Image 1 (tube, rainbow, N blue to C red):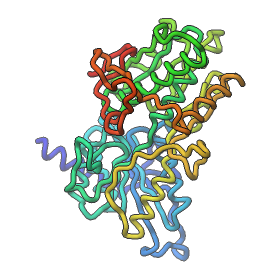
Image 2 (image 1 turned 180 degrees about the vertical axis):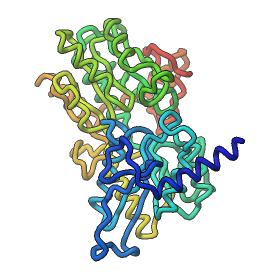
Image 3 (image 1 turned 90 degrees about the vertical axis):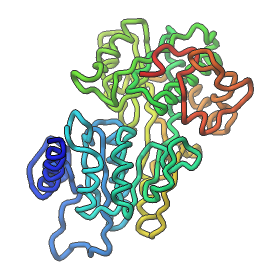
Length: 423
């Protein structure tokens, strides 16, 4: 029975891809039932791009392509490829997760995209691990990128030398989270800061650790306060965004942080509930602030109380990958790309940026910029010991600097953080 259901799901994907029914997705033409969407309207016959000149690529998103967060950042990265690579055309499926598309897996979507001509496929969530690995196994001649993960990292724990067509790309958001943490410390009056977490894994632990280190450094060095007076806690909702009946409600968790004395909430989820709720409470004369995540323009939801947003800028990296495929030079590399410190928010060069928020005063902006300059120069390296894990065991000895491996595979939250280190 399960095999018949799986077969029916795959057939539905293929048949629906040829159909023409509308959904609630924001696209430039009506998407098919499967969600596979061509983002460029078909040109008239006399202007059709020659098949040899066209480059089709697929973009598989875990959430809505207009979520003002993680998925929209990837979607706009794909648009950047379309705008900057001649002949590029993107196929899109968003909301590829068990709640929104039950029975539809990432590998099935990839197969459908390849059938429609995709020469490169992007899997844009850690949650797509199984689908990305399976699709790479089943389609060895199609280059693919799993945007996170370590399957192409020779020194990583899960290296797959057999998957010569699957690379990894991820931004060094650790820097963005450190800046977010510093902004929170500069603004907080209570020293009580909440972190709205998604699910628990190596990635989310290392980002919480980075935010905490930014908070602690700036609380001590700019606010001249004892780090022991900080109250930094994380609460995990259970997924990258709210799924009613499955996850905790991020709006409710945000309220709990504020009700518990926090005056700043840093978001680690894909969507903007923390900022929206902070804006509502600030409108009722509460002295509260928030830091959203992922998307350059996320502060627009409540600009006056936004302290800034650390964001991913996937376009330049995705463009380079597309060009390597077109040139026949694609290699399955592991790329952990960082900010362009010379021009942090240059969308043609930076991989990770930080858009400063209206909620910061001029003095706070100046101190935050000083912190950023220290990160850029290397004078500030927050992953330097002594640092302990949450259970008191040593992470880094006094003066020891963490390697990429140490940071990437965060075993626990750091000592000083309240909240669970494992599910």
